[in-house]
Amino acid sequence: MDTWARYYACTTAKCWRKSLVATGVALACAMPSCVDRVPDERASKVNDQTNKATAERVQLQRELGFAVPEGARVLWIERENGIDSIIRVKLEMSKLDFDTMAASVPIVDGDLRSGPGRLGRDKGEWNPRTTVGLRSTQLALPDASFMNVGVAETAGVVTVFVMRHGT
Image (cartoon, rainbow, N blue to C red):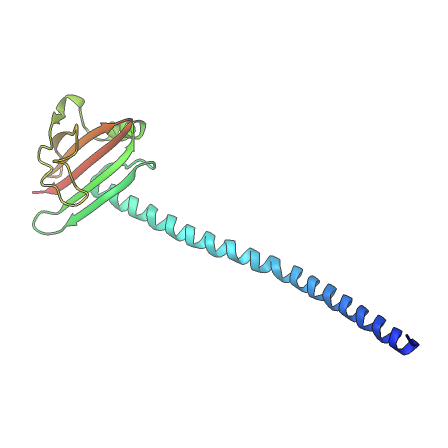
């Protein structure tokens, strides 16, 4: 191989190495900014969802008149506005969460009677008539409204039906 060919081959190889190194450096510098942005966008979406869920929980607590435990799952909500405003909520929670919640609602265990009481008909996930082991009561509230409450416990999980309505 002549000198010119060796020089050309050496220069080309150096150029390729330099260009690969430069590309690697450029990618390494660019990557953190891309990676940093993705979690921020995800975190923003999670924060938005958390804020929305918190706002919905606060609204629900305002309508029901008692604190819904953080660990409670809202299984069903229905609102009716008219002469009598009604909200129906079906919750699922641990026994511990229920005991905490029950302390803020004037429910006396002796007041709970077997059956769905005045919780109304089954409708979709609102199914007090077919829930096994349901006990219920009706509470007269100071603001001329009523709260019908149904409670069923299965294997440490408590299902709570709450129907609050005005007169």
